[in-house]
Length: 232
Image (cartoon, rainbow, N blue to C red):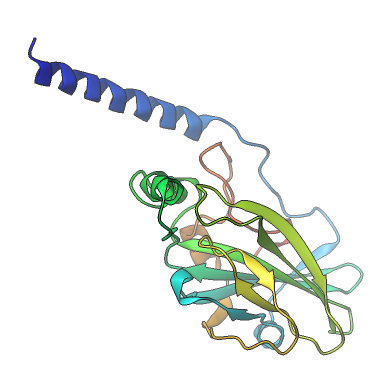
């Protein structure tokens, strides 16, 4: 058998094996599906309130600017309000040189496009602003990149929460290629102003926010359980 034919057969076998592995990982269960809380939460839609507390964002040119912000909100039984702001980018990609970023581009954000398979189109990141019952913002939550190294293949997500002083606005900066955040001091300038709108159910499904049957390669995007029921 000619060497070229042997190579072709081997390559075909490798591709088939890889396809079987991916199919298996898509089917492999990964935790339980999230559900809207049974009691104590009421979906809320208030565009004015969401606009008033929209976090300010600074995004370096290398990471691109978000194309939109979509929100969902809910009122808890104690009267406090939680607003989930989903900043949306068209894509994410590590532009840094080196083998780690190159492998990320080949497997995750390009090439095999595992990112789209796992989560859905674009990139969607969440910032939650908490309001007291009287409407005062008390804190905001987000994910930051722990020990960020742009030359690495992966980025470690770390949850963070910051309290807000009376009248203070949540301010953040994009700190990594996959659009995780760091908090900015009060008064810091911001440079993005994406359009804000409610996260309607059609768009929610289009971005693959929630997976009814999560698997190793099909996972929920960043969301809170109280966002799972849209406001009327």
